[in-house]
Image (cartoon, rainbow, N blue to C red):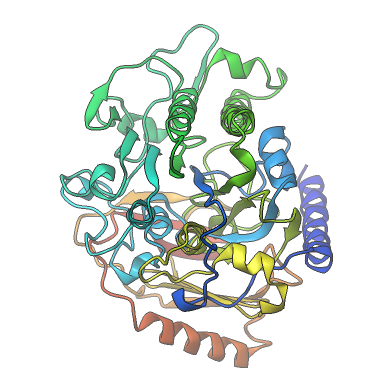
Length: 509
């Protein structure tokens, strides 16, 4: 089996490189690689009908989980969305864990600019994302859009920090990080227990309608889809902005009999429950897009679909052929499924140019005919319609405590703490850290890894010794970028020790 797995890994790696090169060579529209300022964004002319805008975020979805990205579980509805839009093979998020990633999506700014560097882990009950930040919902609302949020918030539970306080006209979902999909497990349902389940209860994370907790036995993914369709149906006289943040396929690993019936019977319980959760997510997106088609809204609706980070090592998911998992600065933690659809404006294609979740706010605002304050990303629609604007050396940056990451063109630089001997393979050792524990450089020092993503997207081969000048250049770029960051609002409460490419590492999430 190890030899077979190694052969499969090498095949997937070669296939990934080949598909990426073909996508770049044949794409009819190329994503711009230069970050556009508000002044350079293309604004939709007044005589054109402004689109509805839907941002769909999956939770802990792996890069290789969807069938359109090579996954083994059929996801025909998401595949169809990709076939009619632009399939990104180098889409990135700004953090490898949930809450910081979402802070960047909704603010349009790197979360380290305002201190949302780590998951709050209990601190979001007393605060949340800085009130000095303007959310994309506030921008869209000021542009005359009806704004709604359905799903997972995770950016503050205290008064003043909730969705209705941050630009959304309506909210249905959870304020925290997760909630059970089923409150009662029937004889034909399935629940595969994980260590996190003890912290994920409906009492702790109730489902809220506007400001009122509600009781429901409905499978949560189906419920969120129902409410998303209901919101879309209420917007007949003005365009709408919908932030649909599914909790699937995050733990707890629970699936209803309806979806389990469509999974392979010879698979393990872990594989079946995860496949069923993916199927429910795909069905939900299919129901929403079918509704938009039936009401004549689909062609003039801008839909952006992505995951908040890569999938974790402790469930039956896949980031193949990428290295690493949720929480890791390697591609498996940061590169995610990323699809953009707007039939009225965007020609279907595939694309391997780097795009970022930072681009979402800039894109949505430009589609509405306005600018988003402080937006750090590109207007993707402008880029798709202006292939001459390509600059392939776009640089993306990350900071997670002492962990430093840069991607610039083909190069990826990772600086990460060394760790004492622990674990094996890709196994994680995660520990709760006392509040106030500083995330600092290890007494053992740090590793510096350089990867050539053009030939090694799986990041198996460190080439720092062969290209010291590239290491220095990227370190300088990171230092310049870091000058505008601030100290974290809170310290990390989760330490991670693991092994990547036989190097023992320490991370803070």
